[in-house]
Structure formats: C-alpha cells, structure tokens
Length: 324
Image 1 (cartoon, rainbow, N blue to C red):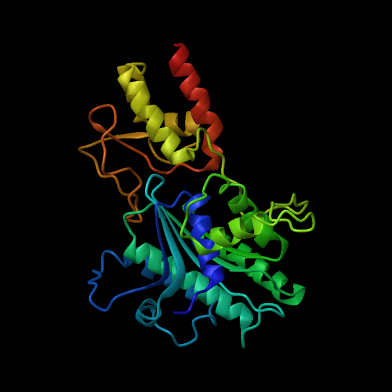
Image 2: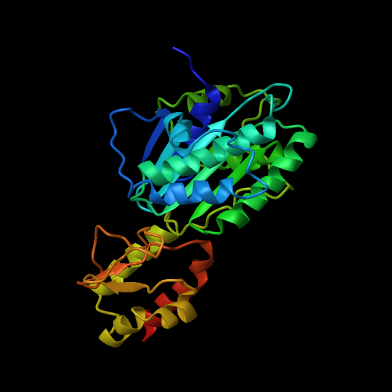
C-alpha cells in the first residue's frame, strides 16, 4: 500500500485545524453516482465563466465540463459539518521545486476542477475552498501562480468560494505550525504524520526541534478566529439558540432580523439574518444561503453566510441583546 506523508499531513490539518469531522484521502467520484442538472448547474455556470475569461481560456484546452468532472481525483477532502464548509486540497512534493510540464496551467486546472467537484457533489454545503499546496516552489514558478490565483478570486467574486496556492514559508506558517500547535493533547492517534511528530518528540537532544516556529512572513491562509473552539458559523448558531432559550430577543427584534437593510447595517450581511420558513432560502444563483436543517426562534431559518468580517458586529449585537 502506497502511503503519502503529504496527504496524511493535510488530513490531520483538516481534522485538527479546520475542524473537519469527516476527512478522506484520495477521494474519487463513482460512476454509479447520479448527478442531476440541478446539482451541477452552479458549477457549469462557473466553468463557462472561467473558460470565457482571456486569462484562463487555455487552461482546460479541449476538455469539456463532463470530462473534467469524470477525471476528478482530489488528494484530501474535508467536511466541516458545523460550518457547512467543504475543503478540497491537492498536495505535491517535488524535491527540486514544483515542476510539471506546464506548471501554471496544471495547478490552476486542478484548483478549478476541485471547485467544480465540490459545488456539484457537496451542493448542500455553503462554503467551498480549493487549495493547491507544495512545500517548495521556485520564485519563477510561484509568482505567476499567485498572480493568477488573485485574478481567479476576483473573477469568481464570491466570498463563499475561495481558491488558494500555498508554498515555501507559507506551507510551514499556514499548515504545519497551526497543526503542531493543535496536537499537544492528541497522544493516542493513528494519524501517520502526528505519530511521526510524537516519535521525534521522544528525542530530548537539544538540536532536535518539532515545535512550530514563529514566521515573519504573512500567512497566505487567513487565520480563522475562534471563541471557545468555535468558528464564526458555529458561534452564531450556538448564541442564537442560547438567546432564544433565555428569551432575550424581542419579537420586534426578530422582525428586524428579517429586514435586509437592517441585517446589512447591523451585521454587514448581504442576506436577511432570519427568513421565515415559508419563504425560499436559496439565492438568485440557486445556492442555499440558510441553514436548512434547523429552525431558529421557532419558525425561522438562519442565514449561513457568516465569514470573518462578521465577528465584531455579531458580538456587538449579542452584547446589546444581553444588556437590553
């Protein structure tokens, strides 16, 4: 059996840093899975949008949408079920530096295909992240890829969809260091990378170090804020339940939370924070924008569109509810 240490590292990262409760390496589609035109509608539109862009028109060459989906194989997939987030990550380790026959196009094609696959096969989720990771990339390779990634995010223009390329120092500051900082209490594990670290930690010689290092270079992954171990989506859901149980939100405020302008002014939200259960919960693009499996305040769906910029306004609102 072939064991890839890079894939094991990423699997542990998704589990312990991104809080993914379901993680699978070497993920592939099955020919037995039936996908309807409704499930692939969003990813087809994105495929057409990217292919029509002059910057990316040559990436797919003669590949059709169906060919890309059928060829799908992702090194590691992780599902954060509380945040309704799904991650698709490919990792490549070339000792002399990342090197394919057509490196830029290969990397971008893998990233875009991952987004298409995540949107199609995990369309009940709200946040999609596709990342290509390599420990080493030469400057002549890294710079144009980063520039293309920046343009890709501008083209996609959706804060619920992110694409990223991580290499060199950022590989250690964004992936390895956060993982090492989160596994101190995991002594009994079958995860290969973590077991390797635990083995090295038995060596007490002063020149052997497995602790994370402080990096001066800015991480290419935005470090996500947590409160009591909860990221923003889980934190919002927890506090909404708590406020309801304590009867701290008035009916008038519940009405306000169903107002789009109020939600924008108070929370910087693009959707009403609450939407009546008798109304549609998808956006104009057909994507679900609300947690569909639970009703809040008895009869309302809560928007699932929470990202890092919402921490401060939501906490301010909680303080107001608790002190009113």
